[in-house]
Image 1: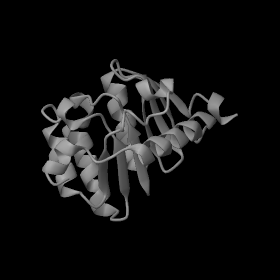
Image 2 (image 1 turned 45 degrees about the horizontal axis):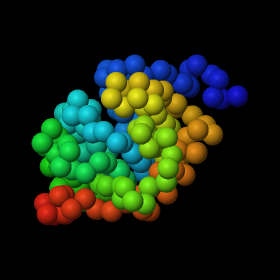
Image 3 (image 1 turned 120 degrees about the vertical axis):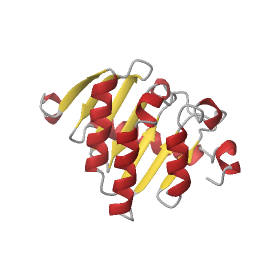
Length: 168
């Protein structure tokens, strides 16, 4: 079973492993990068190397889509000005939304963070505050469940009013 292969699953334990996992996901993305996080950590989402990798992927692959569901921008925009600038520049590829708290399903996974690339790779942060989780480089049942949850949340999410004022 692929889920049991240690070469395909890596434990994420803190900032450096999480950075490497996000960079690996960005390197592998061909079509769509889905991200859901209840907490935007500037150490990850305002990291110059991660922002440069996003920019490079979008420039090299014009059909690439980034669909990110983040908490309200008022909670993180001061700590992540690079992410704001990047989303202003890449408006056709990079879509940021905020969950509609009144329409969210009651699921414990929504207190966690996860990133999925092309329905085949997953970084799942069971503890997004401490950046603890796993990185799976092959499709798994868990990834499929989280992608289904992401799509449900995405369909119920909305553009962030703070970002809309900025033209994003």
